[in-house]
Length: 226
Ligand SMILES: [Zn+2]
Image (tube, rainbow, N blue to C red; front, side):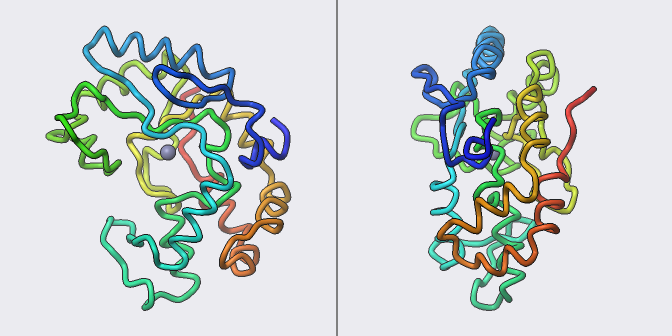
């Protein structure tokens, strides 16, 4: 991937799929659809709630959270009072649940947030919270199925454990053959250039702390099984 693709400012590396509707890196499509077929045989309708996401979308989300137009949550998922936070605390609160624009794994087209549409009652609104994926949750069958089968198709969970950066996301899958290359190519200078040239609110503050943010939120993820 080139610098624009790595940071979600181009989409020349992704293809649009109609069924299920999503956009994925061209090297991911066959494996994802094969995994979806296998899941269907187990009665699971595996669908992406989110797939490729571009820089602009991540930026809009960031700016809304910075302005207080979207709620902020702590690591335990409890709402925070935005006005009581320092700039540093605000950055941490946003980063716990949303990636920094330019640094989202969703920019690569290798990563998807998955749901089981067959398990959802009529009109169900997906929240993407850990409880939905735990025993007793609406997606309780999906989690053990993925545990058993996703590695066979090249997928793993980069946010399976709390490493002090991003929160735990049992719904977020990554296709290792593509993501492994992307994380090597997304260097600190590449990320810095993407942010410096953007309309990101709180940008100066983020750029000051970028080496730490890069290490905590981009490098500190769970590696695929070797
Ligand atoms: Zn995700």
